[in-house]
Image 1 (cartoon, rainbow, N blue to C red):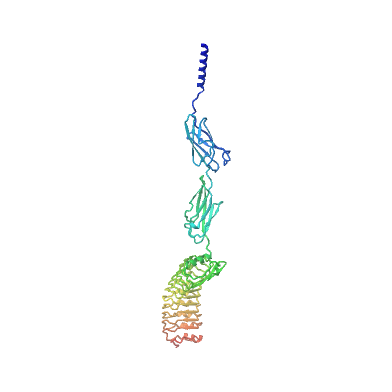
Image 2 (image 1 turned 135 degrees about the horizontal axis):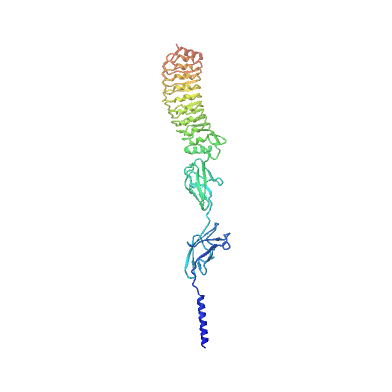
Length: 501
């Protein structure tokens, strides 16, 4: 009996001993061992993507190779044995921002891992559109879309001729994640080329050279600008028609060659007139124009300029650039002085300064080597004539009437081609004897002066047909002149009191 009890007790002891040997402590392991996005679980992935685990910093970084939607990615995660994780494995999660995963060990201890999913940085750095919107830029009536040459990285655009390039505002479109400098909708000066740098998300960049120019000015543009510059004009131009149909305009192939506008209320000439490069005749008679733009000096083909009956007080020096000018008519203005540059007009044949306020003539007027007709009639302040007038050897008609001249230079005798000479209504007290050299002279007007005698050399004027000498103080004519009068059958006005010896 005792033996049986002993064996039973021994058996129970062994059973208890074996049970104690099989028990172990709960695990403390709470690690993320792997973190992946498998293509079979994520339709947008073409390959499995494994994350990089930094055990020291307890971070997981997953770098994707494609731009995909990361708002619903399903991760595949392995963790320490007997541990748990939250959020759970295989649960669609939004990784737009870092996610904290908590791994809890068997013994209840836990560890946080921060999981960051990074999309690849874009290398796109393209300038897609470059536009000047009319709503953003004064002077534009329509949007201007630039041409982008992607191969050469250039941008070009042409804005209307009258739009300033000083502060244009571009509207840009670039690759989605890129940046541009200068920025979109920032005013810039495009008088010179601008460089726009498009920087990709990955830091790479492309430079685009932007060139903006003004459109060429058409003759139509010039005329419309001129019309608008004179709001009080009475022109009846119909802008819907060809310019050749506009009143006073003659054009060939849309290029203006002649302008002849009379009494239409113009007060200004547009500076854009310089673009009428085919203009050869400009007649603006009976307006209120008080000044000429310096740009008129660019009209290299201009041969006729007639500004009769305006309000001009002076001429710009640039008038001397009109080297093709043959006729300059400034009749009935208020000009008191001519610029010396008038001497540059070597082609000038006619210079009409009748009824102005001239008080002098520049000496360089003698350089007008082809001048055939000169009139300063009615210049009541003009008291002298430069001696250089004798250099105008091609002169045929010279009108110095109704001025304030007390004498005329002897160099006048050099004008041997002169046919008509008018010096009436002045204060002349004598006529130089060199007048006898004017052998081609047909008409000579000396009336209404203070002459007491005439030089005998006038008898040499073999071509003389008309002679006016009334209202002077002459009592006796020289014999030589009397003989000429008889020979040429020159009739004297009945009011002439002088007689022949």
